[in-house]
Image 1 (tube, helix red, strand yellow):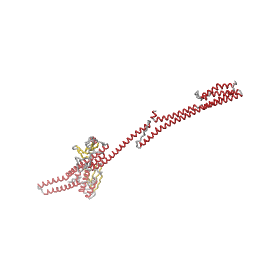
Image 2 (cartoon, helix red, strand yellow):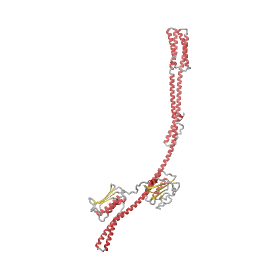
Image 3 (tube, one colour):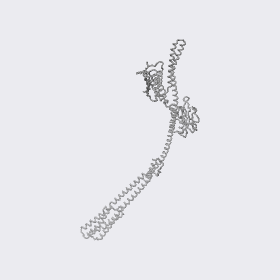
Image 4 (cartoon, one colour):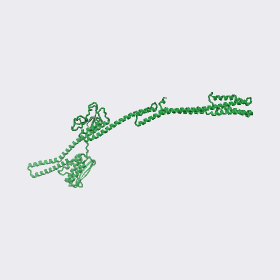
Length: 636
């Protein structure tokens, strides 16, 4: 019984088994009743034949009475024997009920006793003519027929009773089946169809993201258990969906903040890399905007002094006063906040210390203060790390640019000193020696003719020194006004074409931004010196300049069709070729001057360009990487 209460499947199976059992019982009862009624018709026929046989005996006795012949007597005997056989016929006896007290059994025994004990002997004596009244015997036989008729009627009634019982049983089984079917349908409707409908509605509502619908099924069967499970699942899904929506909204807000911070970093990178040396004016607005977006602050930037090994405060947002080492008192980038924050130094604040470094070089630190109620997420920490990377790059570039400017200035001074030493200083030394010689000649009172030769050498030396001075001034005043070496080469060839009186061909095939400014100046000076020599000495009618980059080397060739060099050497008192060789040595290249096979001179310079890089790759230091993700929990 408990199983039927707990299991809908068990109830459905029990209903099907009950219906099947009723149908089976009905079939079995019908078969049994049909089998029990199988001999009723034969028994009625046999009983009916007894009545006919009785009439035949009466008729045979009447004929025998009229004609007492042996044939008639045998006829009466044969009919009597047939009556006895039919009365004992198994088809009649088997059709009778087995119960001894049944009326049919009593009637049959009465007929059998009357025939065997009374009628059969009287018929026999009547045939033998022993004084039995035939009329009285015929009357008794007629009474026997009446008894047989009653027996036939009882047999028919018994058969009809079986049929009625079968009908009643069929109706009973049909009613029981209908009751079982009704109970099963009621159970299926209330415990299967209705719960299934509620489960379908729950599934449909869940598909529409409505997790508030509940089946509220009662009972202990499978669907009730399934309904309660689905109700629990819907409740958990509602909680999970709400939590997921909350997380999505948080992630969306965090993503929006990240996008805003990335936009701030993008805009700030332009200010950092385009603001010159003013780090405060370029970085302070970016840091304040990041504080507003991420709800943090204040932020302090300190740079590391490698000489004294200390941190120098450079910039602080929300500061009530200037930094100690402020370089520009006309700048108010740190003092734009009307209400400075005072989180640092309190118990309600925490500090995140981030290294400002490039590779293994520690440039400074960035202190990010925030409230303890506001936890920094991983994305916020990544954005702050990106901020420190930008600040590190800007500071490093600024320092490298300053160092490069100093190196460039020192190189330029070295070049000037070398140029003065190799040209004008030597000429002046020569003139000094000639003046000393002239003084000795005057002290010895040598003839004026001998002193005249010295005066000529002094005049020639002064002219040479003046010419070298003008060349140096031209060199030092030279600048690249166009975008790259190509424009300067075009201007130079046009300038010397006007001096020479014929066009100077230019063949230029060099990728843009291949050479640094120092290499551009040296290449341009070599070309100008070569063209100047063509103008002064070559007496040419054609000249060409070729600048080509091939096989990772830059090839510079200046050709003419002039008189050439007599011995492929430098002319006396001309330092142009010497200076060009010095420039080639500075570039780390090869310089050659030779005569062309077709006539004229060929000046060639070949070297491998070296690109200067402000930021070089350095191995990462584990301590710096660990410091980048470190956090100082205690304020101050």
